[in-house]
Image 1 (tube, rainbow, N blue to C red):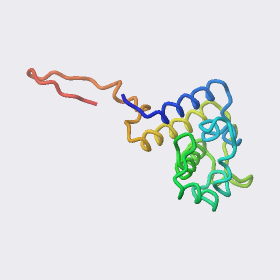
Image 2: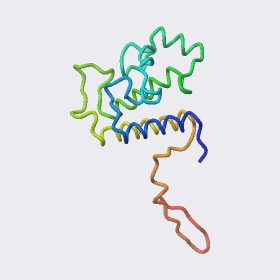
Image 3: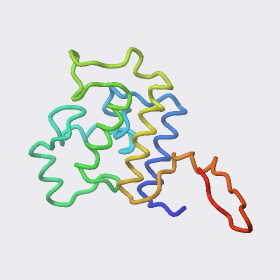
Image 4: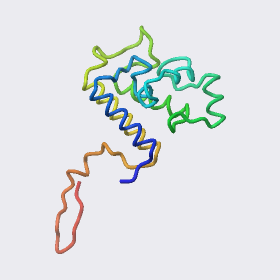
Length: 151
């Protein structure tokens, strides 16, 4: 399957963070976007709230100038982070009064978040979902010399 350089770089960073236990949804440097952006938190200045889908003035300026951060626009970054946090069980935007998972760094919680992020990254780059395992279980049935795919 052909992918894009930004997709490959993002997946590598997220995979490394997941297996090195350096993925933390509550930290701007160690969340999904923080890891994609090389463990920096400068991206948090494009929105007023962690987990928001609304660009602030600074974010809008970067978006309108076509600025990319490791290949992603500010709006794409906000969508990536929101998908990650929501799939991890957070109520958005992050706030101490909002719902959050009991253990945000639990591997199962993080895996749910990463799965959703990978699905979104595939949509953004117009490639098939690499996490779709259903094709692994497809069975080919032969009927009178005709091959029929069954899911």
